[in-house]
Image (cartoon, rainbow, N blue to C red; front, side, top):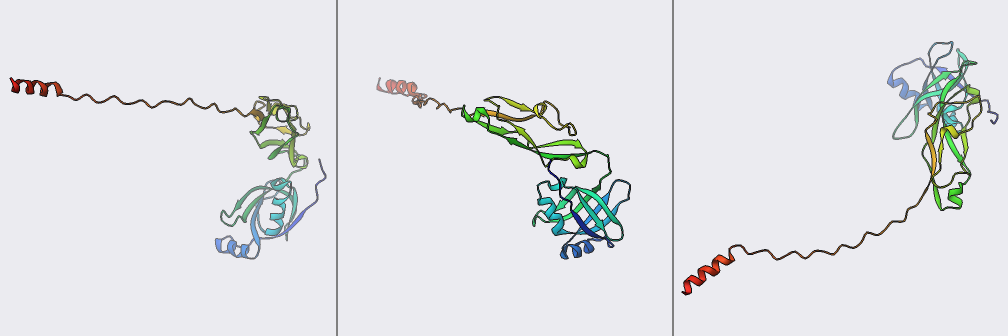
Length: 222
């Protein structure tokens, strides 16, 4: 695993609790955040939007460990636990951070990255389909991988890759069922043209009562 860069975000305690205070803070480029867990109590603070947005855009994203240094409170190692984003502007408007406790494992979601070109694609005109793109794991926060890389180069047509096939570091526990399908190699089926169906010519409708009229006509002629 690559060495993680130390990140520090400086924040200040949040005094107000109303919606107007939150809107005012956002206009100033600050995001209301809540820190909880570990040995300390819950703390409300205001953190710079630009710093939090940069963390979320990084390779490790929401799984990034960073130090949140709150004025007059102190610094704690934290991670994103939850966040709210403005659905229209796509801007972070609130975040919950979890304090990290040394020696305590946590559960996180990481992405799955397929590595290599399957034999079934390279030699058998198949196509690779990734069924699951993220997976839940449990590990020490310092051992969280940015992604879980899975080699698919040996997959042939109709082969299936399961969670049980993933080789991971012994420090990482995968929480998904071993039978969960991660990826498979399919093959494009040629469409068979349906045979043309000749339109049936409808039979002429029977004229009801025709014989009766002919009989009546015959009686008149007699």
